[in-house]
Image 1: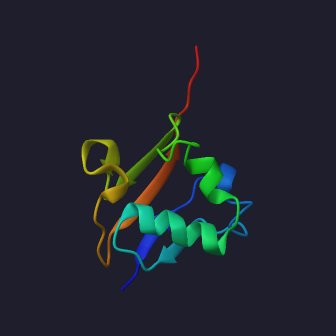
Image 2 (image 1 turned 90 degrees about the vertical axis):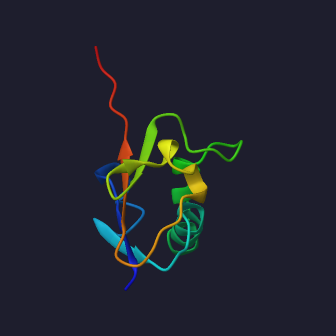
Length: 91
């Protein structure tokens, strides 16, 4: 069984309006690479030029922030769910 990736509304124009896409990956980094292969342009919206997840993008594996796990090297397995959530700022 593949890993599900929940795509936020602002990025769905890149995924043909798909809210959930499935990938075959062993780490979050691999999942992002597969998304980029299938949906060109998505990686640049998630990853900074230095290779880290953008400051205003949160990535969760099974509701746990990858910044508190192993970041992009966080292992994923069949049945896991990755959620990409843009941070919302306001005043």
